Amino acid sequence: MQSAVTDRVRVSVEAKFSPERSNVSRGLWFFLYNIVIKNEGPETVQLVSRHWIITDAHGEEEEVRGPGVVGQQPTLREGEAFAYTSGCPLKTPFGSMRGTYQMTSSAGRAFEITIPAFVLRDPKKMQ
Image 1 (cartoon, rainbow, N blue to C red):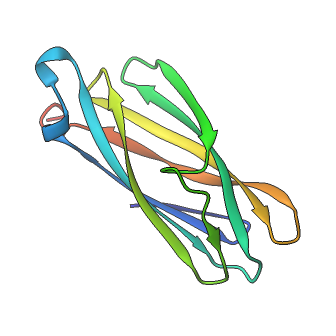
Image 2 (cartoon, rainbow, N blue to C red; image 1 turned 120 degrees about the vertical axis):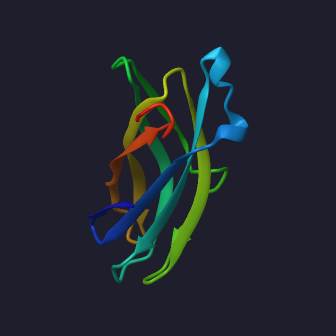
């Protein structure tokens, strides 16, 4: 599991290959990732939007931006956490993801937190 803390907000990520959602014979690998966002500071914060950079095994990058995560813009008080699972298709058996969440504090301060880089890997293709 990868983890990063920015402005007292921790983001932890774990990814795994999803063979049941993949179609390897057609060049499609699908990966699931679980994320936990935890507010470790005293100020209430809200996740407003996301920015992902997805890189495949050929170095091709795709950027994804959008409001919230999984249709939500969670608000976290001190000590609260929000967990979700999402997925990413790739045209290669190996890649990586990294990014940021755009946040606001209860005082109206806008800031970004880091989503740590993590690897997407089909374990059968990497041996």
